[in-house]
Length: 152
Image (cartoon, rainbow, N blue to C red; front, side):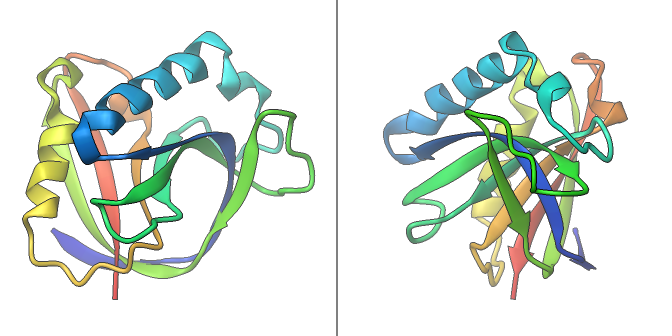
């Protein structure tokens, strides 16, 4: 666990409004990933900087127990061209506490890391939190995912 400052950056992708209440996110987020893959969203994002996929949690109603948006997106150079059915946002400059998890996606390593984060005494901002699925996340049996949580 390490705190770093990240400059603002722009992303374009697809979104769902969800909540952790009644395990709704456990259904909504996998459906969003399925749509991202099935519709080949990655190839349709203009002005991409890289192919790493960002799973962003933002627009929090309250905190991690309320409604929030999940956006699957890529970093882009511009928000001037947003394809129909997608969303473009700018993630503001902020301090982030960085976590990482390794293992098999089939073992719910990301969800288990979030359970740990939710039980950590962090002074969270609830502006934007995100996971990065980069080159180390391509082998589903042994992945490494970085998670950034905005903090004050």
